[in-house]
Length: 286
Image (cartoon, rainbow, N blue to C red; front, side):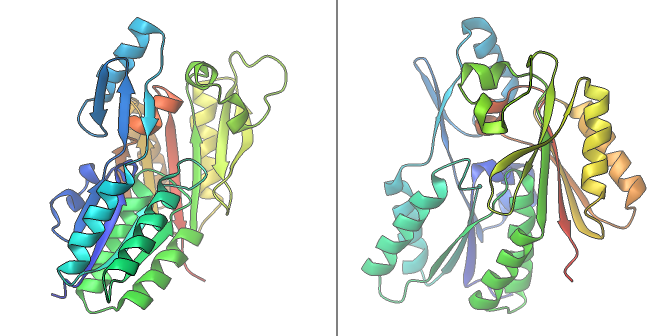
């Protein structure tokens, strides 16, 4: 097995819930959360505990990207050990992690002769990032070089479609982010927007539903319209029953397409709240 190419993902990828967590060729950069006097790295505390903090205090956690020094140290250690690096980050519209990693890579490549670090904006979030990372590791282990692996990863990014819906607008209201999912016409109460990430990773509201049942039905319809599909991903925040239902519906529609189901992680949940749920699909290459 070739192991000269390593993959780095950030914690929003939900890699902790996949076999990537135990793959020595995969490295996870963790974002940070703060709530009052408490600070922790993404993955250290369960979502239920964070939501309980919000319920008790009425205040949302603050989130921040990883310190650039930590990223520089990771990249330096990898390239000095002879590894080439492909990093897949969360959508750059949602987080500054992508730009920070680009700066870190530029510095390390200037400081370490022969360093080769490729930073890719996934233009999505959650488990589809891990799905791309898995493909990169599988193909590079079989001998694919870094140029071909980067091209393949960017192609998968371009073929990935993201649809998600929140179950409560409280978190967006408290965080001042209602505008991030578009202007909601009339009263916001009872409206659950379905959000799509466009090809630049920007959020756009593609539909609005007044019941959870309608949301779940519509989100499946929107995802299914992107067929033919190569891979399906479902992610949620404390909505396991609904997520399993979406997985079952997608499996019924596309029985031969692999499906990955994970949580969304504390950082996204801190902004979107409990009950958020999404379907991500990767279209077949033309």
